[in-house]
Image (cartoon, rainbow, N blue to C red; front, side, top):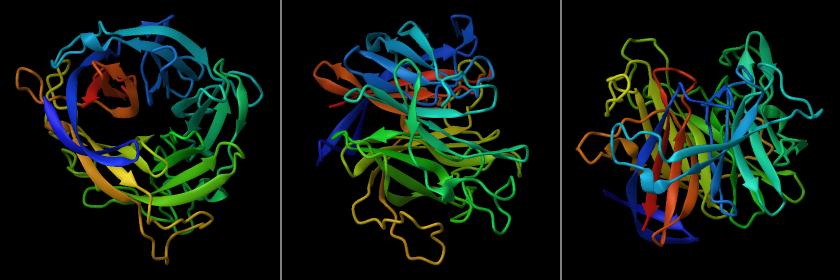
Length: 382
């Protein structure tokens, strides 16, 4: 099953065919070393081992903040609505330590993304922070060694920090919205720059997404040698594409991860959800739609306005990054003709070479919800 994309690889434009290999699904009942497996908010391939790293975002509820090492046997992936989990093997689990070298306590941190820097032997990870009435926590981007020990953090500009009301929509509010902050980490292929992005805009820049309304997210860079913040751009997140089943119920669209193709080009995931929405694809477990829509976009920062140092973009003319849709995953089908049911896809990485072709891997965050599942999707880029 092949899908034609204008995919930009190795710095030059080529019409590429993205071939849907199949999926594997791990049920929410799964565990590893006595700890429930789930909440996988990112994935990163490690060529040296042929394995993957995936961070867990459960806020230390079930065990201290952690990341997993796992392997995926792509030969066992199936274009089936109920493919099983035979291709997934859990290898290890590493506790992430705070800046004092101690495990994080409950609700102290929300790990959402990670990338391995093999050259420096460091892992960079994003903590989303929090904006609720009981706690305002700043979003952070941190370094750690592969054994989970802290190695410092990057200086996130103060205008990302939540101040004001919990909702973020009261006049004078600034900073990230709750659960709409840093969910992505990308390292450019030259190894010089780290990028992260707020899932939606900042309170002083734009409202969060809604049906018929997008949001102006910020991309933020850091120089990996100096550690200093660098260029910053605006990414226009699309509106929620469908309403919830009942007016007023929860609905959102946002950016949970991105993958760097060059110094200025990225693949971005937009993940939309609306409670009870009838989306394509029926989940094998629940026999119901998942209410998720996942789209991949190609973006290019060339020509975009550098807004670094701007505490707000209101009142300024801003050219956002160029955004082109690559693929609506709702268009994918299994071998029996059924539409692929999509869970809460939040992670993206290039994988190993397969029969001479590069692979692309996606993973979902099951939110530890029994009605959801951990989903791995695999593609080849021909």
